[in-house]
Length: 304
Image 1 (cartoon, rainbow, N blue to C red):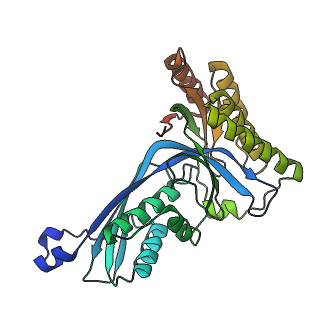
Image 2 (cartoon, rainbow, N blue to C red; image 1 turned 90 degrees about the horizontal axis):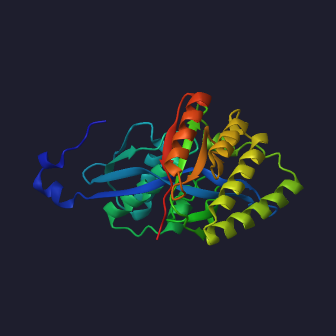
Image 3 (cartoon, rainbow, N blue to C red; image 1 turned 120 degrees about the horizontal axis):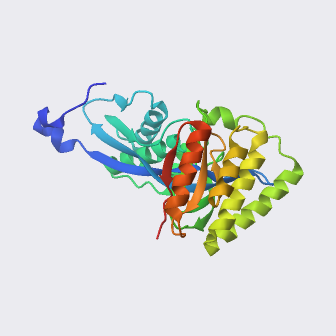
């Protein structure tokens, strides 16, 4: 792809060209993910982290060609095309995405790309782009995390629909390991889930528990629910390091273990406001390094 430098273009082009920039955060896996005993029962609960995708869209009014960089971001390019078509603007453009979220790991990298793209294109076109409109587009592309909302949310990821805003949590550290490889979100969500009616009733209880825990700012309960959900997900996507990570969490005084249910990452949740939190983080990182040979520390987002 050739980058367009609008400074070299004729004055009439520069007057009508427009640029929009926006961003979206990712999530560290999910605090909870499963199936409820109801229609459209697939759901998840987000854990927003301080990693972002940033999208920049520059309208090219003298062409109808749309381009994206990096070139493999085809879903974002398709979304930009859908918005341009619906806006009735017969123009092309250049979409550039810069992300600090690794792909295929369960950190909502694709969802963040798409939400940032929708907002950037809308900004360039001066189009309204409320969350429900974004959801309607994303439902036509792929299952999506609830990264549209500055909050911990319960979200129906297959139908791309908000279930409930649960609120905000104090910022925490996530000491994570990656088991390697990558998972395609669309492929993963096409797998039949082997959950029983008893499992579905347990997910109802876990959703009630996490809803109350967020409302009370009860980090210990948040960690307990995350660990329970990680264990229940083993029948769907087994993680060999889950039980060792739970053991490390217990040894260092962590809150619980959170996983990318449709990804390859696992993380120990730590309360950074607790006494001796730095020592706990160091001990967790050392133990995780010995276990898996790779460690990344994330920070969760807290919202006013």
